[in-house]
Image 1 (cartoon, rainbow, N blue to C red):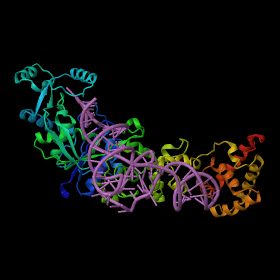
Image 2: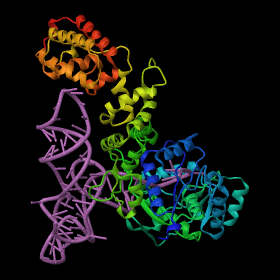
Image 3: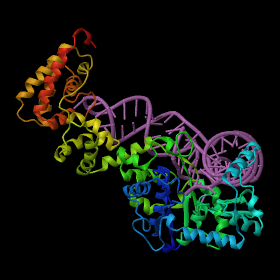
Image 4: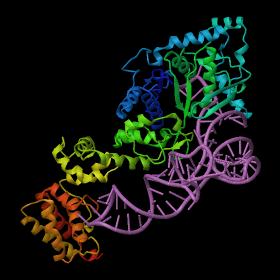
Length: 497
RNA sequence: GCCCCCAUCGUCUAGAGGCCUAGGACACCGGCCUUUCAAGCCGGCAACAUGGAUUCGAAUUCCAUUGGGGGCGCCA
């Protein structure tokens, strides 16, 4: 493979949000291009006027940008083989279709959608393979003229050879053979003058000098059609590699039905692009028998189609979460703080003042960095740092077999001592509170547990002393007072656990 | 129904005839650490779909069967 000749493309159709399977295909194309110092091209396949979704192109491009998948040619950046929107390339497809008709490799078909529907229904009823019955394949020249003059809508179909086989070598799957007779006369040009995928992709891949077509396995069975087109149009065929598809947990092809499948959703939930890339790369590709964490650079360095597996993979969210946690922990504190703020500002109660202070977050970040798997989780983990009043069940204060009286005493004593504490740092807090536990004849876990609830409103939180330092003396004192008050509201007898 | 692809722990995977009493990771279960929760460390559970064939020897090759997936649109 000559380096400068490698040209691959990602060809999404703007019919909705790009799901992770789709993005994985983009990633593999991109990695392949970058590894071989080739070109990565984005081409928008908007040949279905009825299904095009407004704004979808932007969402797709934003998704790529977010992941750091940059393209050398395509929307916004242009290139020498544009335009990169198929809707702007209609003349190429129409020309090619016309040429095929002239050559006798394609023909006009006047069958109505209704007739085709009925035909298919009948075929299904008879348990026959659905497919065009080739009614218009033999129409005489005069009938053509008559129909054309009468204004009948028509499409152009490919005149599929009825004999022989089509064989090709897939880079990932090896030799694959189809019988031509099993392939029906598929449509090349629709009645609205737009091409179908088959025609458009073949024409464009040729014009854009695509060297390798890396696409999902779902395209495998239409590859012989494409090969026939390449041949009929006398184009040089690219190499094909059909990537294993991504499955949902129900083992069916990943789609919107499987919940959070859109790449945008992962961004919103606070996954890091680096983690996403790393995880996606490992879905169908591996470096060796142990490496899991790979930087973008390493991925590019090592990516190879030889190590792409042939088996469909199920998207395993647990592993993604784990991996995202790894990347989150690797971040510098300041960097993490910066990334956290937008999530807090989005999710914290409206009562919390914006903008949120970076200096304040800088203090909180170290307390949660090893406790989060996604950025989105930060809010619920830290909201007590922003709340004025804590809302919790008073019996939470009763940690590990403590009773009402004990808790009260613990809180009162702590309050007293805390007030007298001059230096409010981790060290002094520990120096004061550890002996206090002993003095109260409580286990450290009991005293600290109670204080934790008093100060944070929950039983699981970041380490107590650090948390208290971040909250500051005043807030700790007032929260302990609140706890004492809360305790008074609850009847003693019921708290004998 | 027809065509095509695929088949190692629950999941992602390593394995290209002897290195495999099958390795790693996630999840799960124990333990350690510990003021809770995490993180970290240590340990455990857990797989070559089945049947033939080739071979001195098969997870690895071949053939069936079974299972799963994909495709069969004026969608991509």
